[in-house]
Image (cartoon, rainbow, N blue to C red; front, side, top):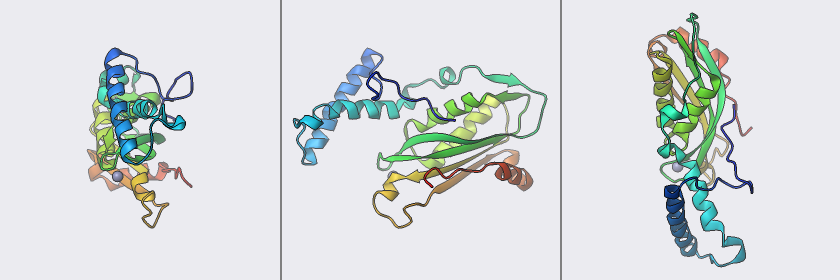
Length: 212
Ligand SMILES: [Zn+2]
């Protein structure tokens, strides 16, 4: 599934929706302007006049996980079940920013868990991924955080999460293997101790290669 798209009348990142955010974005923009000038550009040039505000809105949106409440984000969509077979959802798209360079990393997350009386709606899994991706992140921590959140929300101890991602800080700096992807896996409960259960998950999780 795709994460929620930013909505703004002009197709840009969203405007601030409260006074605190508006003030924060304005202040970020002043720093972005200073950075652009330090890079040797001229912020009064026509094409750049609106760039500090645009970039500030983008940064604010791409880190909105910090300002969200997880209980509100994933409210509802828990269903009772008597089944105890593995539930898995493949290839949830995500976009995040690496905490080392503040450059994008993005890819897909596949989630598997053994239900213990409850299953989560697919949209809920997408919102869990989004909440943890929209901040400065490490791929390893993103993978672990999603696994722990799914365990908590589904009330189960048995969760596996696989994340495949491309990191712009590697690709854009011209490291060889430009097309390589980084794969991280987090296992909780029986997925950590039972190889056959892991095999069952990997047999269904395709782990799509987004960049071909
Ligand atoms: Zn990086």
